[in-house]
Length: 230
Ligand code: CA
Image (tube, rainbow, N blue to C red; front, side, top):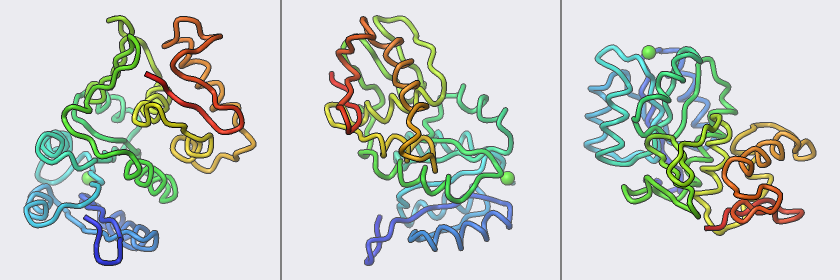
């Protein structure tokens, strides 16, 4: 829910005071309305009264696990959730669970990275239960399970490859510029250095295209970016 000044709101569910304080200041400076909750109980009370645009959710909270709360939010409201984990190893555990988180960050994260991820998620079209799966050709992308299959066979994608394909899939038939790709997935990388992006696109083509040298789905729009066609 944007406020009268058009600002979007972030519910920060976090029990560490230093993070709450830094985010209250940092996110407000970036133009967001920040609502703080220190426990899951607080967060549930707040959600009865207000509908934030996005939730930043710590994994370990005094009265329970962020994992269960994330599932709850996903099934009841579809407000996008960014899960916050204390260690990278926890991300892999959380990724293995089907909890419907929109994204993940690991502490300590940079505010700039977090804001980039928040903006990227808020740019995505709002999802409904029908959007859990997007198909193009014989490729099926399941956002809840974070899995991709081609002709019924599971395709192994790295986290970045999945996120890049998700960016294209949520803009099916639309051009996604190189700038948006870099902004969304490689924060702060220069537009001139697009080798990493090209490598990822190449790898995605090898995995989803019948003939990667003549892509039918993931096409290059010369000088602009890429477009995923159904
Ligand atoms: Ca915590």
